[in-house]
Image 1 (tube, rainbow, N blue to C red):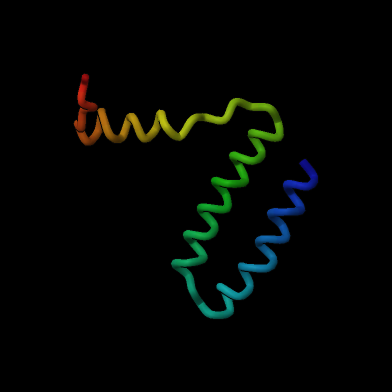
Image 2: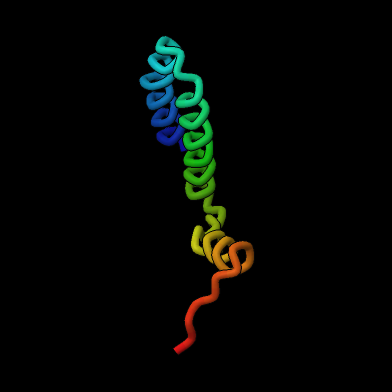
Length: 73
């Protein structure tokens, strides 16, 4: 778990100051959101919490929300 914290601290200290210096606020927002998602998933993995499958979310999006059905053979 310590390695995970150090890895993300290093990634943030390398990337964030340049984004702030160049005033790239949208890129900083997207970077922060993706970094938080990746950190939470990594933390769940390290703590042996079951990580949800992304396929279930995609299946919900495709079948339930978009209404696209898979062809049955």
